[in-house]
Length: 319
Image 1 (spheres, rainbow, N blue to C red):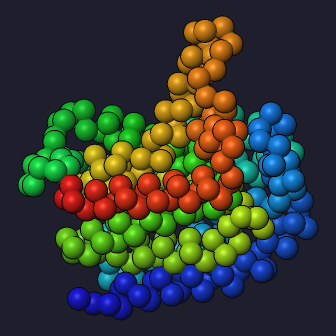
Image 2: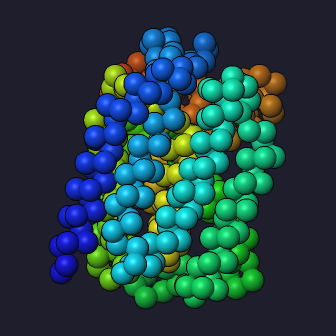
């Protein structure tokens, strides 16, 4: 086993993320790119108002720098890096419009969706035409069995990618939550990438290192939030890696927290409209529901991370 492509990306990405933090965070603070906290949310979050956001820049920079050392010898990381950066750019534009230009809506819904469709379309073309990666999906718990939807593979890819990205976006609501959950998912993908010799190890390891470095500043009480810049990028990383490894059906297992966050919002909004104003959860996404039930922010993050770790073990067993 070539430990070089496992250890070095982690070290480089961690060092870049950790070293950039003390430089970038004060810069963001001077730009006054502070987070706005919803008044109807948990009252403990009101003190977070003004905390710098757009910290996803740290994660993306660290991953790019680490990947540049390996991209020539490991070209399979290119589509993953592209989807991560593509969604990160969409998130950056949304954050910039909201916190720098002070337009509370950010990108319009149609603009954000159009951007996501374009980025996903380029990714789909690249992996199917250039890399000739099959869109048949490995079935969990059935060794050597794959599910192939034929002509429907592309529409399904669009759905899975965009759903995963938005799931990561909803998960980013507590200090260290999205970072903690995703670093475990990235570790799962690293184990799989090594096991099958996919050549994705440099970027999965880079994401692990970048997130560990980012967590130095993102754990409670957070000095910086990743914003849409980071959360959309992380969702893109998870979706792209799953597709290159032919594991999109494993996303609901290893990224179950992403799934439950999205589902909780859909249920809450749907029931609110149907019932004429009633709610199932005290607040959605569901991590806020647990907070309003009396859980501390640290407890929610710890439990969600533990659940992710256990489900990643299930994911490995399902291979």
